[in-house]
Amino acid sequence: MTSSPMPAPTAGQPAVDADHAPKDAGLQPGSLVSGLPKAAPGETMIAIDAISKWYGEFQVLTNCTTKVAKGEVVVVCGPSGSGKSTLIKCVNALEPFQKGQITVAGTKVLDKSTNLPKLRSRVGMVFQHFELFPHLTITENLTIAQRKVLKRDGEDAKKRGLDLLARVGLGAHAHKYPGQLSGGQQQRVAIARALAMNPVVMLFDEPTSALDPEMVGEVLDVMVELAKEGMTMMVVTHEMGFARKVADRVIFMDRGEIVEDATKDEFFGSPRSERAQTFLSKILQH
Amino acid sequence: MNYNWNWSIFFDQSPEGTGTYADMLLSGLQWTIVTALCAWVIAFFLGSLVGVLRTLPSKTANAIGTTYVEIFRNVPLLVQMFLWYFVLPEVLPRQLGDAVKQMPDAPFYTAVVCLGFFTASRVAEQVRAGIQALPRGQRMAGTAMGFTTYQTYRYVLLPNAYRIILPPLTSEFLNNLKNTSVALTIGLLELTGRARSMQEFSFQVFEAFTAATILYVLINLVVVVAATFLERAVAIPGQR
Image 1 (cartoon, each protein chain N blue to C red):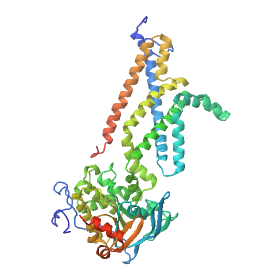
Image 2 (image 1 turned 180 degrees about the vertical axis):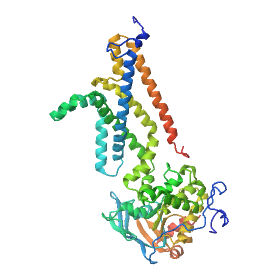
Image 3 (image 1 turned 90 degrees about the vertical axis):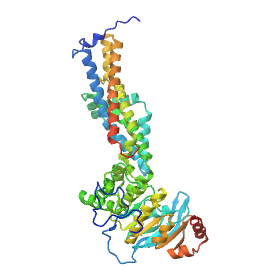
Image 4 (image 1 turned 45 degrees about the vertical axis):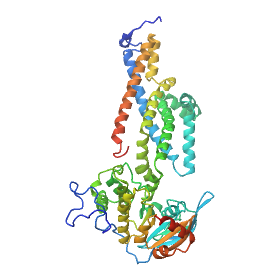
């Protein structure tokens, strides 16, 4: 919590008090993750097994293989066009792939008998451009999928949604519409919206790339907290500071291939491939 | 110009014996409004369905949607009116065709169906444009939350697309209302048809069509004002 850009309110203060609560409280103490199924540590949550993907003739992914264990935080980086966003979109089948297999918490993605909407409802996803639903209030954004997909009772869904909203410090904004919030605030709502579904895995697709620099910190704070609470995360990002802080492993991609798949220390200490070395020297220069 | 102006003609009895000429025009206006509203119900729902078909990933759905739009958009409304009214009953099985011909108010039902199907092709294009104008990530976000395709359209894409296309949809509604006049060719007693009857009975052509013009303008103004209120009512706070 020391990383929070705003002072956390004193312990006795209620989390949400519309009149007196600070407009944007920043990350609040308390758990973001709840109801995670207990499983043996080290269990594989995402297994990506030799997948390849083509857009017509053009091959965007070539024989990519990696694993994400339960509770692990894996950062995927690489130059633009390297296929990193495409790779994580394959995990919840937002992008179809033609060869190989991905298994998420024991369910095969490329299988006719798999109920994809059900699988996706257990995989939280955060997008570069937030993608909150602009015609719904923040509360409705947080509850609609809980009600329509998980068939939760309206009151339960609202309680869970508002609880998470308060945790990301935006309890005072529940009645607003996405267009009335800043980019950083919208992205925190988007994270809360994904968490409201009690996902077993969270995917982040460049969550801070569309943000003004001063708002990157507030979003990363939430992600760091999430990582500390043991959420399994796959994060496409250029934020090497975030990678150094919480990543267990770093995957470096180039031209649709996984060039390097190493522990954080190995990757930042002595990347083996020349391409990764060049990439690192470029983005760490400034 | 040798013309006998007679503005009090509206209060004269019409030779049909059902009231004054004014009553005749107003009953025409009623048919115009009822026909337009019924046709719009078909146009809106069928048009939305066809528009959605054109935005689905399925090639078959796309082909069906495109075929519909290109057929109904590219044949003149007048020709379509004749096809529905004169040709369709002949190509139907004998009994069914006869039943259609003997239907009371056949011109009305034909006009509603014809205009509805015609306008649907235009509404479909608006709906397609509205959906395609949304950021690609919106569909992805809906899908990623676990929504089915139906749910993604119902809760995410369509509510936003309709808001975007409200102004052009208003234009379509106005077109639809004015297009009811084509139905006079199949004998629907709508406003233009009634103005023409008045002119034929009384020879007061200027008065008859001035009245019809004013009534069309007034009713369309009402639509425009209503659409402005609707736009304000559904506007999303925080969006420009």
